[in-house]
Amino acid sequence: MTVAVDETLRTATIAVLAEHGWTGVTLERVAEKVGRSRVTLWRQGLTVETLLNSLLDALAEDYRDSLWPVLAGTGSGREGLIRTLEALFDVIDRHLPLMLSSDLVFHQEQARNGPVSFLDPFERFLREGESDGTLHPHGRVSDVAEVLMVSAAFTYVHMRGRHHWSRSRARRLTLDLVLRGVLEA
Image (tube, rainbow, N blue to C red; front, side, top):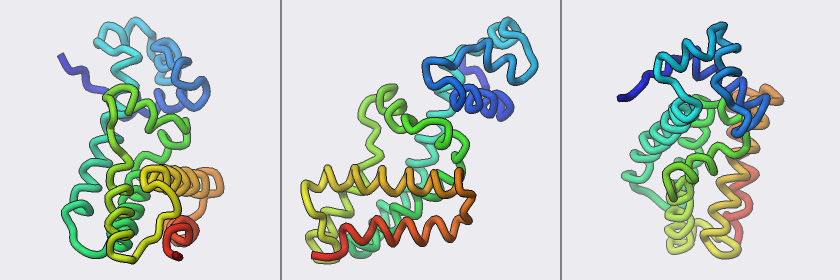
């Protein structure tokens, strides 16, 4: 039986996650945030696992859906990498409260579902760019992809969520910064 988790419960779960970390999320703490009792949530079939999984499911599904058109597109490796970064920023904007709550979001999803590869698009376009001469990764492509994705994602999260930069400002400056590392030979 699938239990629906409404937006109020998701918001409360994110607030608890931000305050207490992944292991500190409890049904009691979430219930307190929404003004209900733990027993009420439990009777509705909700568990901590259900609450956290609903957040991770939404993020992973959004990421997959956002990257599919990028992966199906054409162009140089550089163009694909830029579209990948822009899609990542779109996903982050839609899940900013979750992304601000913990720097372990991507790791939690991988721990839960195995190697959910958030890095695959980055690796693909770095390889294509290296092959077509539009990108110059300095090091093992898998390592460069990981550093690039993490640098872009958490710089963008921080500037949007903590410094309250506009989308365009955060995108422009983050893209410029992370691309510099792979554009020059």
